[in-house]
Every structure is written in structure tokens, then in C-alpha cells.
Amino acid sequence: MAEIRVGMIMGSKSDEEVMQKGAAVLDELGIGYEVVISSAHRNPERTASWVSEAKGRGIQVIIAGAGLAAALPGVVAAHTILPVIGVPIASGPLNGLDALYSIVQMPPGVPVATVGIDNTKNAAMLAAQIIALSDGEVARTIEVYRQQWNQ
Image: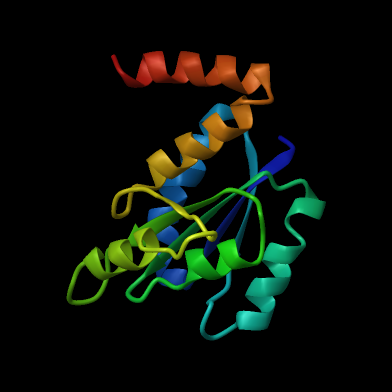
């Protein structure tokens, strides 16, 4: 089993199908990850605890997916200096546009990298590229993967 290096957090079980697409990319790249469901609104203490302890568990990057008000990625970023990648989830009457605006409009000093609505594949690739900055094996794996992906 691959060493866990990415944390994936989502606000509710309904986000799981979208987040699984990113997990599949990490599987293909051989990058270990852990997944947790924890709402920034319904489980704020649990969320803060999971994030605060992530670095100690070997997590290098966190992917946070949320819909509607999408507070989760920002709350995650507020509790760590690890890179956080926000995934707006398509839900509700605005079909993810509200989540996109919420995640991309973070205040100065609390950045969240943001990918397109439901685009967990890009979130996983970005997480892998961040890890590849200090891991040549992951960098080589990404190069091969991207060549295959672009054919």
C-alpha cells in the first residue's frame, strides 16, 4: 500500500461520487490518500482536529470538496499551512457556481487553490504535482501518466 500523502475531505456523503474520481487518479499514480467526511458546519471540532493533525500523519496536500456555501476548503486552510485544493461540488439551485465563488474568494493570507466545478481529477493531478516537487519518482510517474492521458 502506498504511503498516505494526500488528505481528501468532503462536507457530506453526497459529495463522495465526485471525490472518488480524484481518488482514482491518485490510485493510478500510486499516491496514497485518506478520505474523511466532515462538515465545516455540522462537525467543526472534528474537522479542525483532522486538519490540525494531518501534517503529523504525513499528509502533504489536502483536497477539500464542498457544495453550496462551500465553507469547508476555507476552514481547512485556516487550520493548516499545507496546500489546500478546493473542489466546488455541483449542487443546489446554482449547480456549483455558488461553491466556486465561495472557494475562489478567500481572504488574503488563507489561500485555497481552486479547480473547476466537480473537477477532482485536476485536483488530484495538482496535488501530485505539488508532491512531485520533492519526489522525483512521483514526477516521472506524472510524466508517463500525462503522456497516456493526452493520447
